[in-house]
Each structure stands twice: as C-alpha cells, then as structure tokens.
Length: 121
Ligand code: SF4
Image 1 (cartoon, rainbow, N blue to C red):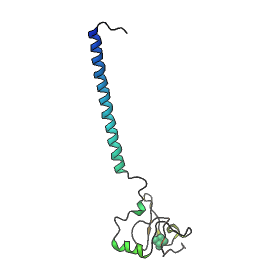
Image 2: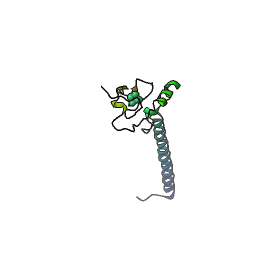
Image 3: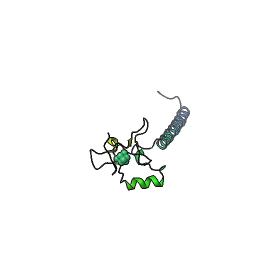
C-alpha cells in the first residue's frame, strides 16, 4: 500500500506507535492481574508438601508430652505395625487425611506407630 504524502506517513507512524503502546500496556495490566490471582491462590491453598498430620498447632502440652512418652513416630519402623491397623486408632474422617488415637489428642498418621501399638481385634 502506497501512502499519499509524508504527512500521512507521519500520522500512520504516530498512530502505529500509539496503538502499540496501548496494546503493550493492556498486556502488562492483564499479566499483572493474573500474577496477583496466582499469588492469592498459593496463599489460600498451601502446597501439597505441607503434611496436615504433622500440624500440632492446636495440641496441648500434655498431649505433646504423651506423644513423646509413647514414642509416637509418623512413620512406623515396623512395616506390619502401623496406626491404621492398631486397635486404638481412630480412623480419618472424609475430608481429613489423618486420624487420631485414643491415647492422646492431635493428628495421627495412618502409617504412624508408638510403643502402645496393639493389634486390631
Ligand atoms: Fe498409633 Fe500408638 Fe495410637 Fe496405636 S496407640 S493408634 S500405634 S499412636
């Protein structure tokens, strides 16, 4: 396409740069909005690596002492003796990945163990 005069070419160039600036700034604005949403989602959804069975934030000092006294470990050293086949294990509810124990309060891993392990009857 041949332009009519140098003035038209100048107007075309100015409009081209103006539109380029608008497109670029819109892209930056939309990109930053998406990044903000991603950061907010990351805050509201903790990473999968955070183990809910290790969260002892609501557990009393007394129950923490009982855990130590019974040598509770979240991974059993004995493959056949785990909390999920212990008679004292309280199974996990639908939306919670870890269960409990009749001896102390707080989350208990299904693959955990303590010295009071007793076979399920
Ligand atoms: Fe697990 Fe020990 Fe409780 Fe049994 S008694 S469920 S092994 S913590």
